[in-house]
Amino acid sequence: MKILVVGSGGREHAMVWKLAQSPRQPVLYCAPGNAGIASLANRIPIKSDDIAGLKNFALQEKIDVTVIGPEAPLALGIVDEFRKARLKVFGPTRNAARLEASKVFSKEVMAQAKIRTAHAKSFEKITDALAYVEQQTLPVVIKADGLAQGKGVIIATTQGQAKQAIIDSMEKAVFGQAGKQVLIEQFLDGEELTIMAFTDGKTVVPMPPAQDHKRVGNGDTGLNTGGMGAYCPAPLGTTEIQEQVRREVLQPMVDAMARLGSPFQGVLYAGLMMMDGTPYVLEFNARMGDPETQVVLPLLKNDFVDVLEAVIEHRLDQLPVEWHSDATVCVVMASGGYPGTYQQGIPLSGLPTATTLSDSSSVVFHAGTAQRGHEIVTAGGRVLGVLGRGRTLLEAQGEAYRVVKTISFEGCHFRTDIARRALKT
Image 1 (cartoon, one colour):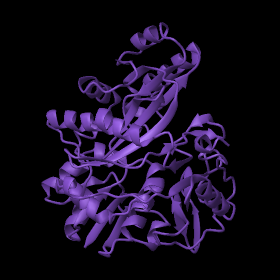
Image 2 (cartoon, rainbow, N blue to C red):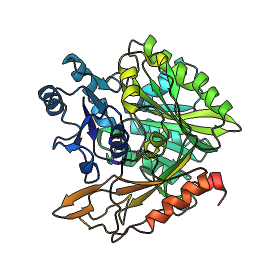
Image 3 (cartoon, rainbow, N blue to C red):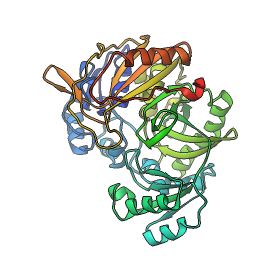
Image 4 (tube, rainbow, N blue to C red):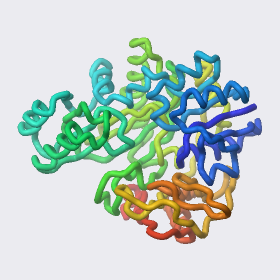
């Protein structure tokens, strides 16, 4: 069996790592991959947004299943193109992926499906947006409509910040085309929770609840990032909350997309704000989160290949999906300057050898790395995701930071308080 994973980050390394544990011993490929993935899969030098190149490779190599990691190829319609070529592919179609690719579309569908979310209004004219924001209670949230690599959301605490965010997005185009239309949204104050789910377009199977740490600094301070770490399970996501989210958020959205003629297959990611025990949707993503994948996938008991096939073949209702009762904590080690400008090509030292053991207490997932001769060097803002696993969150946290201390590269920074909310540290 041949499986192709599309992408190059920590999420894709976690996917490849999990697939490598399959009893079916698939031959693994990853396009374009990274230095860490190279020990587990054949790296293919095709960019994740080169849809034609990926399709041709899959056809030539007779790939049995392709798994799409990042959001960009989904928004470009890679699933549609693969299906036309009769290739099996895991992920939503272009129309279904609009749930992530357009925040305005997502809000419209949430309204139709009566899913709780913050009140918001969209604008295509900067003058209208600036006039509207003057009337809003602070803080207020400004969101670029399209894909902005997790950086298109600004929480403004002053009118000056709010107006500058609108100008930066709509006039200065700091997010490119993604920011030409903006959402001005009510600020929700609570604790964030992520619940992802496998879905075949009808059946919904939630994953254990996780919590991501978006802010760059300890205590949730500083700029927003793509994610500085995560942990699972998040105690905030009780069994009752998980069932409520399945019943009131995930299933209604999957049903709504089916009614719209765009059935959603793959992973539906619900980014939630818990307010007084009630879940409100901050955003939907059309794929697995990063770094949430790194803490959730290691807890999957099933053969990941079986789950992928059940989703693709519309028979998820026939597969009991089971999870380990352990806890996991992932700490992101980032380049100096991230989430701003940073240098690349800096050598890493102290990296442990790769492991594919499902019961190992730590794994280092590569996110932004490259091979240069015999050296592994930095090649991105988020460089590594160090995973610790234990019977409790405290054990898992201790294991993650034990490994973090053994790895170094110039300018490296990381948060020292991942899982702090759950552990009250």
